[in-house]
Amino acid sequence: MDTTRLAGKHVLITGAAQGMGAAVGEHYAAQGAKVCLGDINVDGVAEVAERIRAAGGEATHIELDVTKQDDAEAAVQHTVEQFGSINVLLNNAGINKPMWFLDVTKDNYDKIMGVNAWGKLNVMQAAARQMVKQGKQDYPYKIINVGSILSRETFIDVVVYGMTQHAILALIKGGSKALVEFNITVNGYAPGVVRTEMWEQLDRDLVEMGMFEKHGESMDSIAENMILMKRYSYPEDIVGTASFLASSESDYMTGQLLMIDGGMVIH
Ligand SMILES: NC(=O)c1ccc[n+]([C@@H]2O[C@H](COP(=O)([O-])OP(=O)(O)OC[C@H]3O[C@@H](n4cnc5c(N)ncnc54)[C@H](O)[C@@H]3O)[C@@H](O)[C@H]2O)c1
Image (cartoon, rainbow, N blue to C red):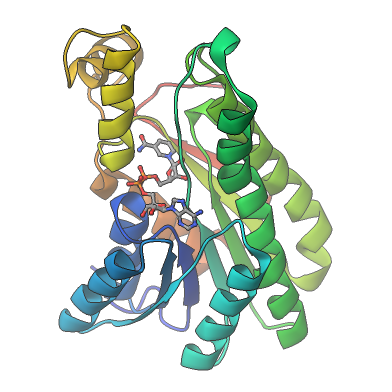
């Protein structure tokens, strides 16, 4: 591994207590980035930050609810206080709760839309305001939004989650146009099925909804029937793409959502 690939990158990562956010944080730090890990699960991010420091990397953490404007501002300022500036945002926090289309409630809609769509816009604004204040630098500031296969597709049991993921694609497109004059690029990556706590919970919910008979069946079935590569993924499959988008290798790129899904959605 190139331990200097992300040197000079001061990154805020949302939803970094577990799953992909934590894995990407560790991967970034191992390549020389300084990472600020934010999450509603403050003990979780404290543990991940400690793990990074124990491995020789630089990390700090902060309690962050991405739906709150004061929290977003505080997380950006904490990053700046710790590292001197912020030049990358990895907007990763997200939630899901499947429901059949006709059963979807306003509460289900508000919660998922609140975290996945408003939460991403909220932290984007806080980070971008600080980047604008810092002024132009030789290489672009980077905002990376985590989308999903459901940014380009949707399924009948997760329509609201799909709506939020389409909103994230719109944030990438709109953000790239709005922020280019400040030398800020906006891109994203879109995983398919990644075996994290989010999918373990989704799997339990789908069994309860009667879509599958036993735990684990959903992931195996999707892998067999819907993924060209015939396997689901783990966070380790995703971290390389996340690193590419934070690195200078992607400097001449904005407004793009990269699918990293083993071949689930091709277009
Ligand atoms: N797991 C998958 O298959 C998959 C596929 C495509 C996209 N994604 C997306 O990838 C991202 C990471 O997913 P994951 O699988 O690692 O999930 P995860 O559930 O393992 O981790 C999500 C983290 O976000 C945090 N979080 C939740 N609400 C928050 C809030 N309001 N403010 C701050 N943090 C909050 C949680 O505490 C948790 O630590 C999410 O945006 C998800 O939608 C996941």
